Image (cartoon, rainbow, N blue to C red; front, side, top):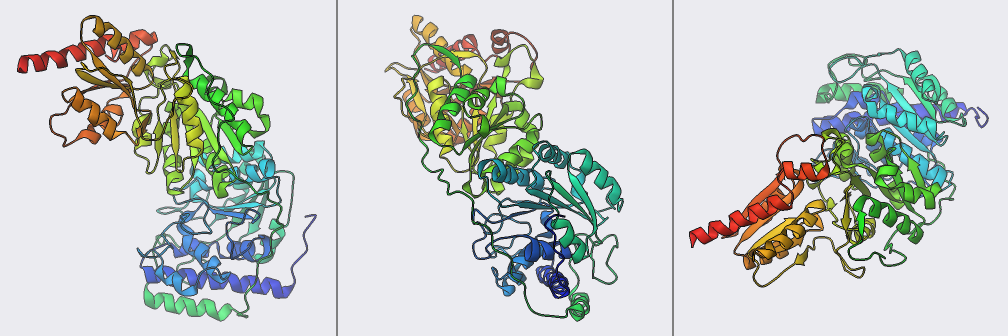
Length: 627
C-alpha cells in the first residue's frame, strides 16, 4: 500500500455515479439489441469504473498508444460494459451503443480488434489472461516501460485449465506489472459456479500460484481503489465478491438470467431506479500515461545474409529452422522466440543461445504459449515465433482460432511432423496439423523441403500478416536448392522436369525427397515424372500445378506424411476441381500409425519411393490400356 492515497469523498461518489451510468448504458444497449449479457456487465460496473476512471493511465483518443496501460476483457460476453466505458470516456458516441450487435456496427457481441480499444478478441473463455501475460512480459522485459496490464475474468471461466497455465506463467516470471481481477459474481450460465462465493478458496489458489491476492467487496469503489493501489514484487489478483445483475431489482443474484436482455418495460423501470442513485452527472477523465515505451519498427525484416548451404549436404528442416531464427534475431531486436520445453528438439535453443533475453520458456503449456505469443505481438511490439512438436499445437487449436479472430500476426513452427519421426510412435506424430492450419482464416502454411527453403520460410513469415505455420521434419534430408533461390508465398517449385514427363508428382518435406528418389529409379525404366514442391500448402500454387498436370496428360499423384483428411492431397483436389481431364491419386497416412524405423513406416503407409513408383506405373499403364 506504499503508493495508496485514499480518494476524497467527491471522487468516490463520482466513481459510484460512473458505475451506475455504465450499468444503465449496458442495459440500454442489450435491450435495444434484443440479446446480450446485461447481468454479467452489472456485476463488473464498479470494477470497470475504478479501473478506467481512477487507476489506469491512457490516452482516450489514442487507445493503441504504446505507452497506455492495457486492458483485456477475458469475460468477453460482458462487452457492452467495455463499450459503455469507452462511450463514458468520450471515444465512442453514446448513440452508437444502441447499435450493439448490428451488422453495420463495430460493436460486436464480443470484443474484436476492429475496435481500436480491443487488442485481442475474447469470448472463448479462459484465454484473456494468457494474452495479458504476453503483454505484461513484453512491457517488463522487452519494452521496459511503465505501462501496466489489467485483465478482468469471470468466475465461470476460472474452471478452464488455460487460466491456471497463465497464472503459473505470471507467478514464475514475477510479472508485477500485471493485475487480474476475478469478478466472483457466483453464477455461471446454467448453474452457479463451482466455488460460488467462497472467495477465500480463490485467494488460496492464487497465492499458491505465486500471486499477491486481495479479497474485496467488488461493489465498493473505495475497497477497489485501495486494492489497485497496492504494488508488490509479484502479480496481483483482486478477488472481487460481486453479485450478478447488481442493481437490477428482482434479477440481482438470481439464476436463469445469464445472457438475457431485460424486456423494454422492465428495462425502463430499472434504469429509472439506478438513475435515481446518481448524484452528479459530471464525468471523470483518466490520467495520462508516462510516455516511455520505445519506438519500435518491425517492418521489412531481412536476413543479414543469404543462406550458406551446399547442395547435397544433409540437414533436418527442424535444425534449419533454429539456425534461421537465430540469424533473423540479428536482423531485428524485436524478433522473439517461445517454446514449450522442446527447444532442444525444435532447435529454438539456437535462438536462445544467441539471444537469451529474447527467448521465453513457456514450459509444457502449449495453449498458454500461443496466448503469450498473441499478447507479445499486440500493438506490433514484437515478431513472435513459437515452436513445439506439430502435434502439440492441436491442443491449442482454440487459442489459434481466436488468434485469427484477433487479427494476430504470430508465427508457429511445428516440428516432428508425420510418421517419419519413427520410433516415438503416434502420440508424437503431427498428422493433423496441415488440416488444422489450413482451416484457419488468413493463415499461411509453409512446408519447406530443405534447409534453404526453411530459412526463406522463416524470413517470409516474419513479414507476413496473419497466422503463419511452418511445418518442419525430423529426418536429415539433402539440400536441393541453391542459396540464391527465390521463394514466395503461393509459389511452387518445379524441382524436376523433362519433355517426356508422364505424371506430375507433388510432395513436400520427406515425401518430396522420396519422389525425387522414385524419379531416379523410374528413369532407368524410361518412365519420366515431373516433381513439384508446393512450398506453401496455403495458399497453394494452383497455376503451376495445373500447367504441369496438363503437360503430363492430366495425371497428378500427391504424396504426404499426413493423414488423407485436409492435407496436401485434398488441397490439390480443391485447386483442380472442375478442371477437365485432371485425375488426382492421393498417397497419405491411412490410419493411426505405430512405432518403427522411419523408412519402415514410410513403406508401411505407402508414402515412400517404392509406393510412388508403383502409383506412377499404375497411372501410366492405365492410360496405355485406355489407348
